[in-house]
Image 1 (cartoon, rainbow, N blue to C red):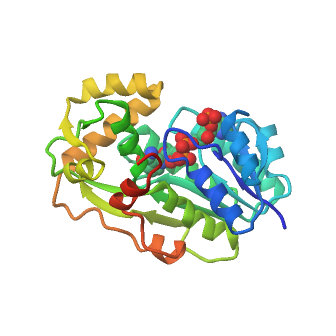
Image 2: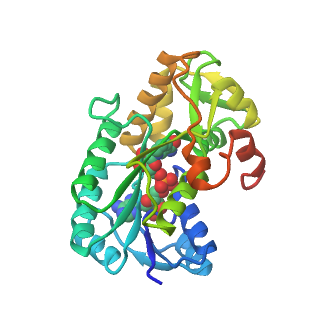
Length: 288
Ligand SMILES: NC(=O)c1ccc[n+]([C@@H]2O[C@H](COP(=O)([O-])OP(=O)(O)OC[C@H]3O[C@@H](n4cnc5c(N)ncnc54)[C@H](OP(=O)(O)O)[C@@H]3O)[C@@H](O)[C@H]2O)c1
């Protein structure tokens, strides 16, 4: 059986969607070629799971060609750092050459040409690049990962969840990274399975106050500049600090009661069971 290529397979600071996906595909008996950025202990874990690990840089065309050689289906993810369009471009060129039939790519809920943050606009351009390559692209436009909130909570005062989101009734659309992976797994296990080319993934909608309590914390509002300074240090990249500070501002301005965010049916329909809520995630996350 041909392997499925999973990029971002080691997982990182966002949701580790590629790590979840690798485990899920292997669990279904589907061989995985796992692309990692560095050969460290995370790669060792992937090998122990049964993945064939390949080390490479997605922005490098030669590495993308090697990664895509002999596969018909692939997962594309790139972290919230500079270089998304370099990676999407190299991936698209290589995938078109090698005749990829399906790519499932993670994008953001509000990706669009006029979206509020440069990263959201880059996601939309990346979607276009993958579409032009004619490689069966499906874009998963995901809400905020549960992990995103949980990791922030873990790095500051453990009793508080400190974000510049204004009043505690400010609403957030959320999704578990494992559910993003589950939808990707379904589409990659059966590359002929039909779906819309853009799939919205929201698995839960919570106010930030309730979300914090669900994670065992108390929500604390903070001014955006102070949070930005903290984020610069924590993420180590202006790209992530700028994007997230702007993202929280958008949620803060939209605040509550807009009805803008709804749980989407795709997780259940494609992934096979109801979404993992933030409460489910809080109970089952490692170490809790
Ligand atoms: N966080 C959220 O709330 C959220 C919500 C919606 C959508 N998204 C989107 O989700 C995506 C990220 O999700 P994720 O869970 O897969 O991210 P992640 O957990 O940060 O994992 C990213 C992986 O990519 C690898 N990587 C970094 N640079 C690379 C390169 N040049 N070449 C090859 N691999 C590289 C990293 O390896 P190293 O660690 O070794 O560098 C890491 O294993 C982003 O596109 C983001 O916009 C995020």
